[in-house]
Amino acid sequence: MPITEQQLLQILPNAGPRAGVFVGALNRGMTRFGITSPVRAAAFLAQVGHESGQLTHLVENLNYSARGLASTWPSRYLGADG
Image (cartoon, rainbow, N blue to C red; front, side, top):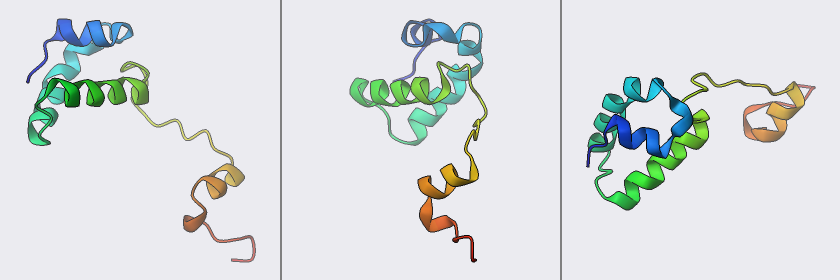
């Protein structure tokens, strides 16, 4: 179920002109991963909007301290003694 730029702007109004840049990629991704029902498309686009600040944050910010990283992903970090 492809979406149009106008529909994406209704869903993510703060995306502005960026909406047109991403419509094609979002449609290809939804097709590739079987996101074909309105409910699945709504869930996917809501998550995209949330994670990207409505397509305004395009790079992960990684604003974590060393302690924050270790507490968020403890299995990936050794203690201070190695």
